[in-house]
Amino acid sequence: MVCVGDLVEWRICLLFESPGVERMLLESSQSSEQTGLPVLSSVLDGEASRQDVAQACKDWRAQPDMQSQWQTWALIGDVLRSDELASSPARDQQFLTEFRAKLAREPVVFAPLQAVPMATTQAAARHRRRWLAPTAVAAGVVAVVGALGVMRTVGDVGDPASAVMASSVPASAVDANGMVLVRNPQLDSYLNAHRRYAQVPALAPTNGLQQVSATSNGR
Amino acid sequence: MVAEVIEALRPDRAGAARTGLACLWDRRHWLGSALAALACPLPVWAVSPMVPAEARAWLHRTHEAASRYNYQGVVVVSASGTVSSSRLVHFSDGAQQLERVEALDGEPRSMLRVNENMHTLWPRPQLVVVEQRDARASFPSLLSGTEPRVLESYEMFVLGRERFAGHEADVVLLRARDPWRYSQRLWADRQTGLLLRIDVMNAQGQVLESAGFSELTIGMRPQPELVTAPLRRLDSFRVIRREQRSTSLETEGWSLAALPAGFRDAGCTRRVLEQGGSAGGAVTVVQALFTDGLTHVSLFIEPFSPQRHQGEAAVLTGATQTIMSRRESDWVTLMGDVPVDTLRRFAAALDRRR
Image (cartoon, rainbow over all chains, first blue to last red; front, side, top):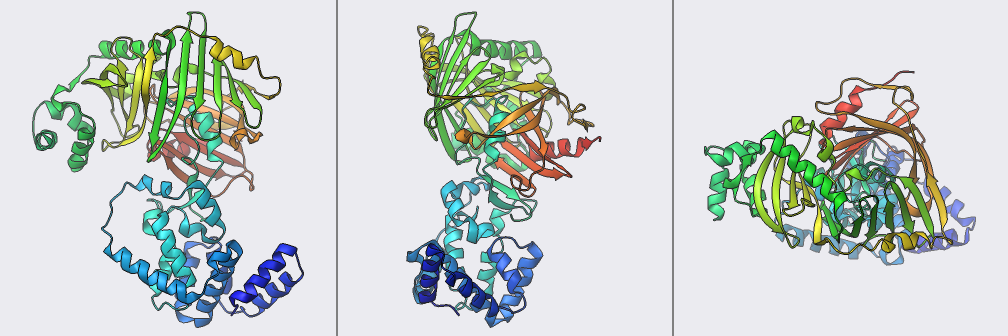
């Protein structure tokens, strides 16, 4: 189990490219030689296949070590991203409880499917990609907030269903072919070339609009 | 009023509405269609089909108007809840077509066109991309204006008259005859025939993408210097010329079996694709075009590169569908304002010959 203090130190190491990083990484990997952990790691990186995600969720439910490891990794990610995120689990738990209560009171909103990817802005998608790739993208802001909460308090929460939601992709973000939504900046250039002949103004929008794509392998 | 319109659109009601608009929409979606109809304040009883000669004349007039008149205005494009706009100025003196389009959002860029020669200016990186461009297909020009076979794939209806962008407009519907394409609703200025707005709609009558003028002046005094003056001040700009060379799928070692109904080959070029807007990187692709007279599909083929190409993908942006996949050592991208199944048909028909 890594605490916030360790992580801050790790982050400083990273900043100064100190050899301490390797030491900490080594320690971290030595303590995680549990079955399913490599899979869990790829789930976190958004590189796991659907079967692996399902298996990881099953293992996670049965193995307290895995739950704790998940929390640690999530915390590592948070600390690396921002000091503000490096808060105590109790605060997250409180946030999540309040968020769930608020969500339960919200009316159900019906919206067209294609509007879903638009909910994540380009910058936000880029920011989250490394750690939340399959989850955050296209799930919309609300689902992302939920997933963050779930990811970071997973060790304290006794409801694996919500963790499944966090680590696999929410149904609304998957199209009819079960594809996962990710960002694809290359699309712009194809669109520009295509629209030379399309009935869209010559400088039709590319920013923000063409930045989200769907892939079947979660990359 | 609302109740009447919904009632008129009910599929179990016989009458004028059924022969026209209501047929466009699936029976199961009559409520959705009624809502779509409410968004467009056109009387549904005004719907009547056009005879082919009339329809062709209408399309031709609209197509011609885009190059014949001087006009300027702001064009707004909305798709998937995103809105963007650009300022457009067009002059014509019979011999020359001059056009200037400035993007009002995103990275500053403007497009200056003198006949087929197009300069795209990126002021921040001081970059100008020079290329040849077929102006026939960009809004407000209408590709179908010169396509005699467009009515084989679409049926044309007069929806009525409406005031749009400060002009009295005729509104028509080009209804897709099969599920391989989308329907389009067009607004054209009554006096000149200039296209004011295009809506692309799916089979349920939902508008997927809309492009149109928000304000427009037709027939102002020509000021060609608006286009030519910036072209004389490019000394500090880095110039990139994008040449394209005609080729064919066969020459490139590919074959395409049966095309989806109504589509036909509209040319194939080997061209350079700008990467990341003004960033300047580039990759060479083969782009084959297919059109049904109103819309078109692009097929891009390039060597597979693990750095550039991610997994198989299907993307919807506004009305534009994209599917991408790997074919052994190549990467194939299909893109078009058509349903995704149409693109899949293209993909299935594509074959590597060597």
